[in-house]
Amino acid sequence: MANTFRLQIITPERVFLEADAEMLVVKAPDGEIGIAAGHTPMIISTQEGEVRIKLGGQWREAAAADGFVTVTPDHALFLVQTCEWPEEIDENRARRDEERALEALRQQGSMHEYIMAKSMLSRAMVRLRVLRHSPGND
Image 1 (cartoon, rainbow, N blue to C red):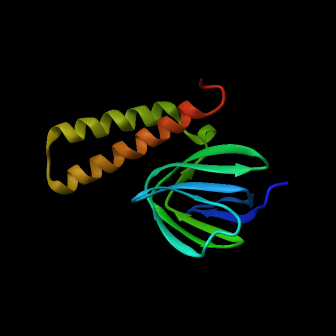
Image 2: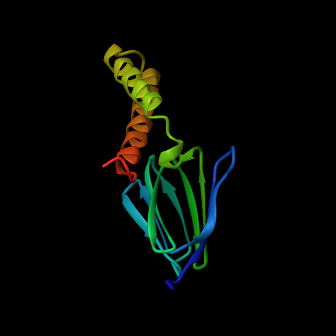
């Protein structure tokens, strides 16, 4: 069996995952970072994107918002605003959110409206990518 570490992924609403993991891959501001057992202690700021988790030799992917990961050699705590498995994502809603965000970007409103629309578009696109990569959606 591969070397594992304790992984906790927590959102304000729930404990998304608490398990022994072999690997966690998150999107950081300067690229993807892989975390495995024995990793050097650090705190990582993460960006919205796909999160890949290796559990029991199998990879799973989830859609996550911005957050932080604290890492020690035997534990990783990922605090994130939202995190969803593909089966939890409503594809129709994600497509509607994408369309609304694109329309808001076309309206060229205030800087605040632009930033909010860009964030909404990013979240919708991540959710749709995770859905496309999930088994049964090939």
